[in-house]
Image 1 (spheres, rainbow, N blue to C red):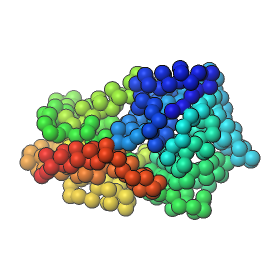
Image 2: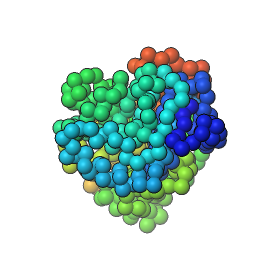
Image 3: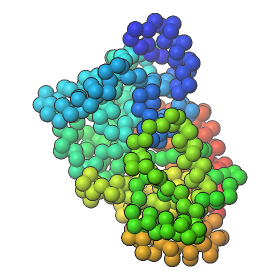
Image 4: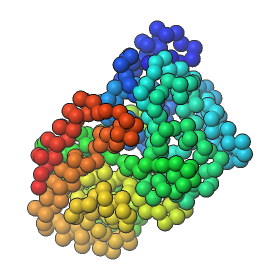
Length: 395
């Protein structure tokens, strides 16, 4: 349970019960999980909110939707610029203009999941959270190893937490060295119950699906095949799809899931493959691998040459390689199109093993283990649902 500033206890309880994006506030909740969904509705945050909803479905969680104040946007923008010159290292602890919240009960666990570093600022809106939360966890999805020396003005904020997780394997040891404490690698995942084509796989009405970052030359070849009516090609048409403003994040994820499970081929590439200025040679697994595999699609593109990919997706034919210059795309698609049973087996294997490895529930299990909490009956129920899906999809 929580109370916003300027609200009575009665109004706060009523609003928390009626909130559509939060579990009902209840005194038995053992986990507090702040969420930005009320003020950041960009497409790039949808996966984060999906994860939070899965976590809330398998545990006793109070989702805490923070809200923006009148001056939030310009205060946040200014604060993010000033932090890079903040020799005091204190600005990272300043509320960037969100409405303040006071927790009204104690929690066993606080989990803060951030896509980017600056989302740590949002936690400052929750007054006294350290006194109310026995164990605290921060999970930052994207932080590149080469950038860590530049983060010296805010990196100390991570020391607020008992446990730190990062979504990029190559970053974990570098961040641990910078902080002088352990950091855990925890990869992305997907809501398999949403993305799985099973138990009744739909027809593959889409031949090739490409979402987000892409190789431009591959894209041009696929456009040519679509123009000649050889394939039905679905792709993004906006400049910056990751920062699109959405009306409903759930609808966006449902749309992606429905397209993915109806796609024969799903184009994938390493994380930030088109931004070497950020990665500096660090190779990591992008989110599309999880989505496409869970949907039972055949992944085409490039497999990341890194240990995390080989560990996470260590099964045959998980990615059918194509050249980034597009030179062999047409030949590969035509050849695969003549092998329907081979494609069926690849898709079935992808869906089955994703159900056993890459649902958000498995990531929550890891967090609970590190934090010293026991799994719930709801988590065990979801595990049985996933195992049933894996059996249906068995090759």
